[in-house]
Length: 474
Image (cartoon, rainbow, N blue to C red):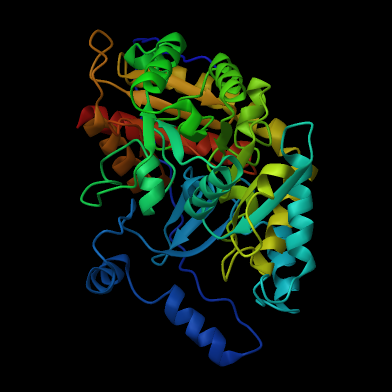
């Protein structure tokens, strides 16, 4: 498993080189249908960012937050241009959705080809081959030397909800155990499992019963694997009778919780505990899957095969699709009609997913993820030492799923969310899109497309260092 790295301070001066951004205005692509082209132009270049923000404020619910106060006009691979023509390097990847980059040619071609045939029938009404083909592919990719089956849905939260439904049907038990810091979605059931209050759970209770929480093994806060396992055993004695627990669910790398990888020994212990008590083990791979960590699924780093895996995000290169893949006998526990959804496994999204998976294979993006992880680790350590001594506390993750944590100083290691927020703001001004994560909002996570060129990566890192220098100076 990956180990955390601290940035050792040096006394060299911070680089404040500005990276110029393109100011070329974008125009809507011309099509054979002038009316459609005109409509597209209105949507894509319909005013300034400020004007669109006013429209958004009047039309969009306040609870929908946006990290960047800009509006996209077009994007390509790891670059994005807003409606004012400003260029950005995208280190956020649509929240880890774009491992194959914006508008990968194979993904776009596959989606357009499918659109020429049919866009929707509902698989529950008239079936179609792309759904079956994607299920076959997922079954082949998922770890575990056993027969597998898959279910396709639309969102990650929907996948998690269905994984819980399947686990309950297979075991005849109600209980679910999740972990502190875990993120599993925004629906009522998945919020019950999510282990982070602000902003996800605030004002939305009460949550469903029979959901229990165990501590995550977090060296940052002094919680060892042994501590976490002892707490789980205590939970079995005090609140969650293991004979009534259907599933234990855990992200192989915490997403919103701060990009903390689960130690391999934790996964191995959970596998043994689940086998002992007849509990199903669910790996929530929605953010960590499809090459993000250098494996198809992050749990593969541990050598453990879960019973069920939830998938979404980068599976389809930007198209909305999600799913559950797992043991065939477990997946078949639900009666016909018990699983599904009107839009589940949309044929266009299925075609896009098959193309995205093919691109990951053909372009060696698993190895690319490992190489990017090594690059970011080394460069973050160097930048932290040079530009922000004693402020970049921890560099952690697996492969290209990496985060750096900011603190006020190394002695107290107190989380510094204000500095993190400032770095993000200064980076955006200079043309780099970044996102925070962590229980205290003091970590920056890297979700750059694995297809990004070395030149783009270096340009983005140069902007990051300049933004960090700006934030420190401020």
